[in-house]
Length: 359
Image (tube, rainbow, N blue to C red):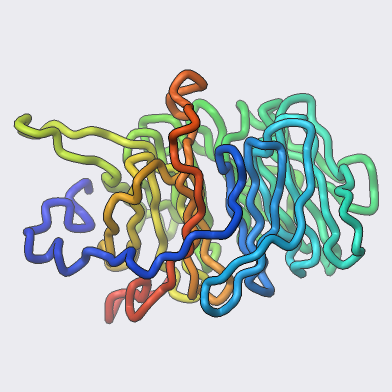
């Protein structure tokens, strides 16, 4: 399936799908160290940003793309992930200090409360709304996923996974957990304390990111080897599963040779069901999975893209240009870019191709 999405597109069709970065706007006062995650508020244009400088920052973005810092809170180590409560009033961070912390924007407090703990760094945080109650689910390198009722100190339930948790995604009643050694666990949140399905990734290399479809019928997986897989949860849809190559550059003067880059982030458009991939090659692309078609590809942005997200209305695509730690500590240096760009979605950039079924 690697020929999908116009991998061998002619130069004419490639230019037709080349996106424009000229209207992208930089976020004011970005973090001082590598950016690990971006998360838009589900109710309004507030953006939460987690960083290796031990902080989670909250920015407000107006209709012209202007931004200003509104709040921040600190962890005791690098923050690896962030998310919002479903009602948009609380921000969560999970970090290397083995804690998840929460800032309640409605309380006028500037101090975050610890709401979760693990035995190893917390790599992933996702919020849930269960019967009107706001809950948090955390995934850690201690191989555990824990559910937290924010009114209690002990976890409401714990799942033991096969290996360290690397990525999680929630949509409606679907929770997808990607771990080391390429395991993928699917949970139906109507029965949160057991696995609905367990599988190994269809991709042959380490999982970097998982992301649920907009309609929660499946999920996308990105690997370190410049591939993305589309997976449906139910067997009846299995014929629609496929994988494709992305974030690869041909090697000059070497036939059939490519430089291969990690797929660091996958974000689904909230209205159209199309999705983005972004990678350590410093590019992002918009795709229509149902038509098996690349909608737009964008020029290199000047550094690795470490995180992405769409706002709730699908009019802004935020991407972080920041070191992704894929080459370890030795390759990080102060000259590398560290910024967040806001890309206004224009025209049909993210709209499915006419006639493609929306899933």
